[in-house]
Image (cartoon, rainbow, N blue to C red; front, side, top):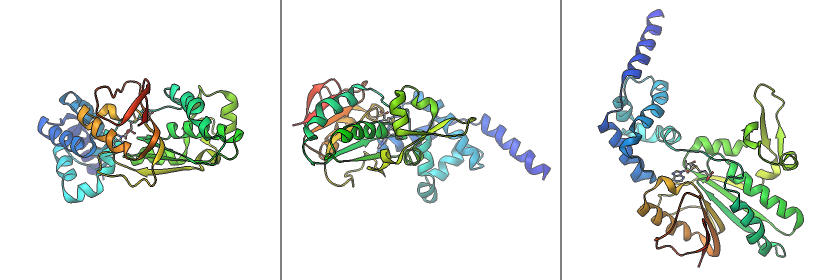
Length: 288
Ligand SMILES: C[S@@+](CC[C@H](N)C(=O)[O-])C[C@H]1O[C@@H](n2cnc3c(N)ncnc32)[C@H](O)[C@@H]1O
């Protein structure tokens, strides 16, 4: 028994000393770029090394090469891909992030839907852990309270099943909702009683019209049902190169109704791209 423990300590130390070689990094970075569009230049090698370490320890492996060989084996590709995606994706997000988009949704898009029972279909592509989805849902629920005929559905998609699970639970640390006005917080969130771990849970009405799905934006086509009135694809394309961005946006536009709106993140740009979108305001576009 003592010997086993000693072995584990030795393995940890070995792991610490091990490096993700340039050749192994290249194999991972080519894979993630080809399959998921995410560019991973050599400068990211140390970052990937750090992110994979925990996983290598969990698998009780001794080196990055052992992990790479497993990952690219038939068994590894079937079993390990989701853990890998959870590790390599960057999932930073917030409630009411880049609020101009939610003001535009509320003041410019929704009024067209007030008098009719024409449903609004929204897609948050690359929704991460759900803060964007629930922000959209708050805006749409607020509108519905004043316009009872109005109805809507929201699709949230991502490639990381860890963030999709968080999104489906709808439970967040209290600090995540700190900037939401108190009245709105009371209306749409429940506070946990656990004082050591203060958290909130979104109320069921916010979740009612939301569906979640694994969708890789690099796939040739998406199984997402009828076309959308609004697509949010914010802070996702930033990880792709220009040619890939243009290809993905053109594909996403096939799922956007004519006259539908398309939002990108504030550090992203479509300038010079051949896409069927008309510029309305910075980061806000409309399908022609
Ligand atoms: C930084 S988060 C942005 C979240 C949210 N849209 C926002 O702006 O706050 C980017 C998300 O895009 C997802 N992503 C990256 N590559 C993707 C791909 N090929 N297909 C779908 N989602 C992808 C990541 O998993 C991550 O959760």
